Length: 171
Image (tube, rainbow, N blue to C red; front, side, top):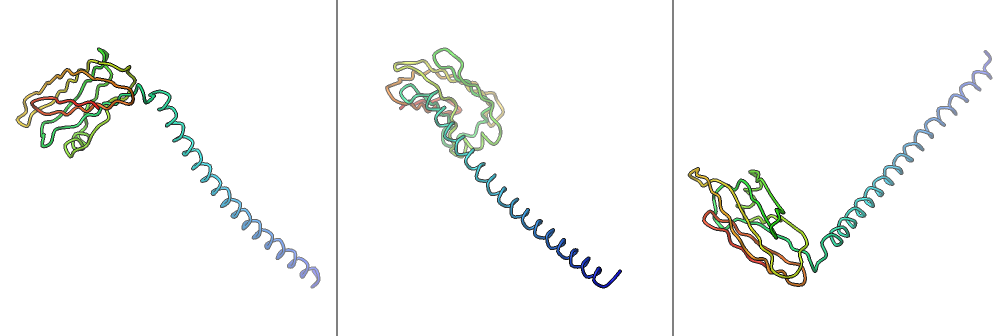
C-alpha cells in the first residue's frame, strides 16, 4: 500500500471517529432534553391530578351539605383504643381499627378525620361506639348517642374519647 493510500485511510478513519464522537454527544444532549421534558410533564400531571381531586371533593361534598367528623383522645388518656364504629342517621358510616402508630398519634394530641359526607340541614342522630383495653388489661366498650345539628354551610363534629366517657361538639 502506498503512502498516499495510508494517508487517505488514516484521514477517513479520523473523520469517522470524529463523527461518531459528535453523534454520541448529540444523542446525550437529546436524552438530557427528553429527561427534562418528561420531568415537566410529570409535574403538569401531578398538578392536574391535584386540581381534579379538589374539584371531585367539591362536587361530591358541596359545602352547604358537607359534614366532617373528627375523633381525638382526651388529654392524658392512656387506654388502648382498638376500634371505633360510627353510625349517622341510623346508617353505619365508618368503622376503623387502630394501629399502634395511629394510637400514638392520637395520644400526642392528633386528630383523625373519620368521616366526610353529605347531610341535609336539621337534626341527625349520631352513635359512636369504641372498644379497647384499660392499662390494667380489662376490656372497655363505650357507646355515646348524640344529635348533630346541621346548619347551612359545612359542619364540623368533634368526638373526644376518654376511658370513662365520650364527649361531643358540633360547629
